[in-house]
Length: 491
Image (cartoon, rainbow, N blue to C red; front, side):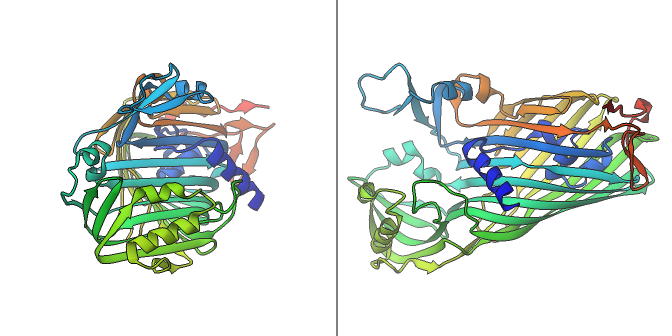
């Protein structure tokens, strides 16, 4: 099992990286085990008696600090080997034809950077009779974000800030964690007069690999000086990190911590007539938990009620990652007057990116649906890579063997994204940010995901499990029973 998760982690870091909400993968009635990541109870309303995820992966990142002009993800990948990057304010007289220009946002929003990744391993969902379900899932995930980075430190704002004129820098935080999780799911359906309710839970064991955080606890006074130097007054903050991959150039998988997590889901289905739903309403609490890193880990605290000089050019001389200890000692010496004073402990804890999700799914007929979704981060009381806020409206057409979705989403109340996803048989591919793949405007992030699944297969005469036909046999939907049986492919 350890080697299995090592393989998934390598794929997560070196292959796919960073996924937002995967709306085309999670929302539809045939999502099965994939829907449990958004609401542990949603699959209770679906037609599938069982569902297997063979493999899946996703990539998402976005920010409102910087962007690349006139390109998209495919263009960047095609020119990855010989491309060059220049700042829009560069003094370079001649810009090569293969160069990309980096520019910066200049507005009054708080700055954010958010990135997510998942690689989904073998996972299974099985319904037991009419009202119960069990399942398990395996994932490797990575989260990194800062949602409240001060606008005062934006590129143009800081560049135009007059020297020797103090200004305030507000509190902020950011964190990164990568981990593997093994989870168990249980769901129960309870009939009520208008339809039925459902409750679901995911219990997760977490193996932490890499982690890090930075947080500014209080407002500090910042004075810009010449030569990349600043005076910092009333500083109070901290940072922590794992260093298992800072000592050597070759990246390796090392488990540096562990923890536990839980997802809770609620479902309420309003049936239009026997067996069919008009509304499918849901609410869920996601990623409640934390990982404690206690191997190859350090945490530091900086508190200085007076002032100190921070000279950024001093840090250009350190060769990373090998000289990270010398760099930290130098920073501690600048900030506190003692090269060892900032050290706090050989451990730290990072909370999971907890969130509240609300879902509403409306059925126009047996094939056409409209879904409304809100995901908003929850305070955890500990530093964490917070999820960005997502508000989405997703019309879709679904059939037992194919579906198409057209999600329109608003990210962090700032950026509107249009996406597309399709399921053909057992393959799902999609993007919640189609413009980042095909457009040629301000490139600030991207989103793409895929999954390979297995369901609706009959082996011979079908197998009996828990008193119900599972592999073959009847698998009537929990809605739109006029569809009859969900047909299974015969081997």
